[in-house]
Every structure is written in structure tokens, then in C-alpha cells.
Length: 298
Image 1: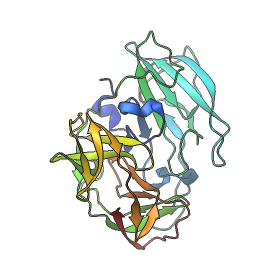
Image 2: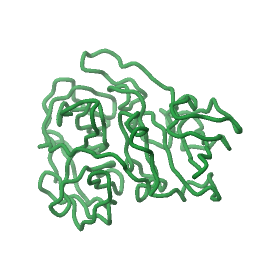
Image 3: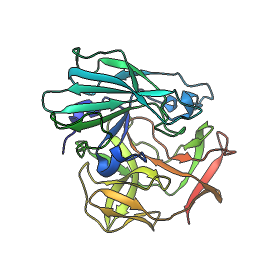
């Protein structure tokens, strides 16, 4: 597997290997990196509300996760969505070992330019390739240097070189942030913000894992155990079986999620180093900051 060194991955407050419906994320062959911090990174065109009730600050700079030579930039046709820009962009960097393929950034770099880790690649954009509840991010994939960097598929499976602490969650919490298509709860709480990555815990054949991906609104997700693949036949949450896994890749069962008895789209599952709390995907919801919510599976 390929991947980012722990010291680089830890520059990003949040990441996901599986939270996408597109083939580029199949088998965890790409990673979405979320720069910045706080609820301004949770979606709805960066207009979510923070704990104090004020509008979150919009941050759009895209710090490079790799060092190397920019070998190609191009404009890419993206699905048309009302909340999204008309086009997406591809940035390809040759690290010397691999070609890296990055999306969702309007480039301020050009072919022949050298970039270092942390240098700005440009401005993150809201693309029609991701749903309205998904925050601005950098999509990153690695592939062999002699491969075609433009094709959507063909990237190598991504390793996860950091430990992720599983947080047991009973499905309850109070709303601390809202957007048009989601709410964020105050539970489970990060035990040591800034010190390590955490994620919502599930169980895979008796082993505690961290769940990753859009459950169940995307076809599948991931079960991460200490950053490495796990082998299992079934995956559960709240004591109920929610899917079956092949290695770390999970295919979700036909499960309905309800918030206070009302069906919702699903849960957004990821790993985070700073603020944490369950993110419920629920377009058109009527929840407000301070509301108590109980999440159940059916």
C-alpha cells in the first residue's frame, strides 16, 4: 500500500478513505483530506453554525500533501449541481516514486513548478463530484509513474499509517452545528483534541474497528483497525449487523437510520484529530442547535 507519512497526514484535521460514491475510492484507493478546523469544514458551502451560533469562517487554501514536480493541470467536467461550480480541476504531481492525482482544487500552480509539502496548490472548490453535505477537501490518489493519471480509476490502495482511536457511541447527543443538509452532535466527544485521530467505533467479528464512509447512503465503506486492514465477515454498530467486509472494505446492508424516529439519509463517518461528534446527513431536517437526538438503526 501507498500513503502519506504520519507527520504529513497529521497536518490535516480530518480524513476519509471511503466517504464517496465514486470508483476512485473503491477499496480505499484514494483519501479525502480536509484542511482547516472547526465546523466550517463540515459542508453546506461552508456556512454551518459553530457552538457560539456565529457563521463559521470560510477557509479555502489547499496545502499540498506531497512534494514534487507538477506535471499536468487540467479542467475536468463535473456533474452539474446547484451548489457546485461548473468545472472541477485535476493537478498531477510527480513525487519521484509515484504520480499523485489531486482534485477539487482550482490550481495556482502549473506544469514544471516544484511544490513542497504545505505549499498552496490553489483554492479548494465545491465540486459536483461530491454531495452538498460534504465539505471542501483535497482528493488524493497515488499511481505508478508510467500509468495514465487522467483516468478516474487506477490508483493504488491507500495505507493509513496512524492509529485511530475508536470512540464507542450509543447514538445519542445534542445538536451543536447545523447546515441545510446535516447536523453535528456533541457526542461522541474527542478525548484529547489535537493529539490523535479518533472515529466512531464499530465491531468486526469481535474486533473493535473505526467505521469510515457514508453509511448507508453510499454502497460501501471501511472498517479500519489501528490504521491497517482487518479481515472479517460482518460489521456491527449499536449491536446490529450493518454490513459485511472483505479485508477493510465494507458493503453496507439495507439499513434505515432514524433520528428521533424520523428516517434520515445516513451517517458521515471519518477520522478526526480536533473537534469530533457524529455527523448526521439529513437534508431538509428541522433540528436546531441544542436539540437532543437519539439515532437508531432499523
